[in-house]
Image 1 (spheres, helix red, strand yellow):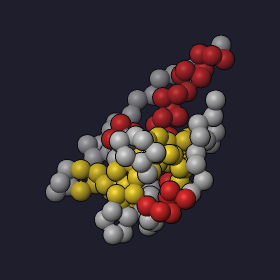
Image 2: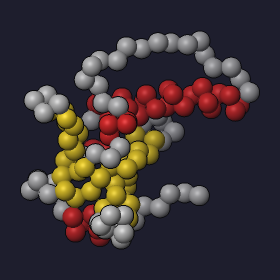
Image 3: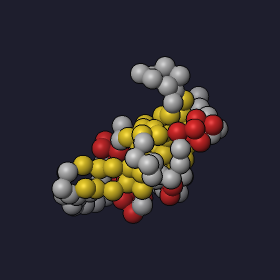
Image 4: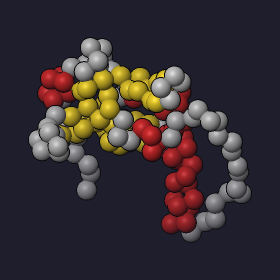
Length: 129
């Protein structure tokens, strides 16, 4: 959860200069950060399969929704369908998805306590226009 919050904060920091340019004011002085070797990047999160407690694939992380408070408000999952046909999106709370790193396999995993049917029956998320 901490890493997800850091991802959200990182994305907000990256967006700040672009937002500042549109408002006509200069951004604050540049501040630099260090990144640990085992940090999660949003590029690794997008496309990550989500498995349930029975080790069944229940969806795939396709996007993050970041609120005005610079926090990740939702993870957008692609559920159902086959090869993109019949799939739809659902927005789930980041607290319901556990993302962890397996050092032995050098890979990230995402898990949540749900079923395929529950996600298929969840309200569909549609991107705002």
